[in-house]
Length: 192
Image (cartoon, rainbow, N blue to C red; front, side, top):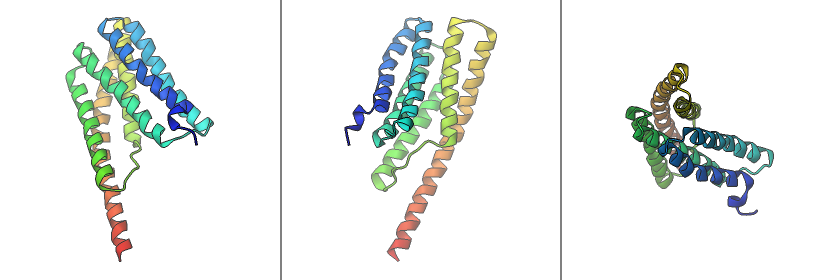
């Protein structure tokens, strides 16, 4: 098999990583229309890489790790930058970062001390990602169009993100506990 780095879906995921500094530059320079356009293009690339992976039967282990990493880098970076620009209150960003850091550390520990390798996002994690994308979209859009409904949509999605961040973080802890317990039970049974 060819190098998975050169598969079309993984190339698109890498392209999404390239969008990040240009979105940040545009936010810092106050050119929110360009930041929003690039953010939407990054979102479309996320949908495209998953669709291509299925259609072309090019799913890879690298892609399974690279895709969520690209999503997290994009979203976390924008939460941070938009908080620095005082467009997103810090409490939301701190919770988003704390959850992601806890999940990353837990996954690394489980990877190091167990044979668990399945760290797929839960339904709550996916919903959280959708809420984060929506929140960032409306926060950027409210900088272009100062309509109250857009501002309120952004704030509502930030609160949905906050709730889903807590719920998905707790859910990941429960899942990690269940998976390690199942693995331990499997080892005990096999040892008998």
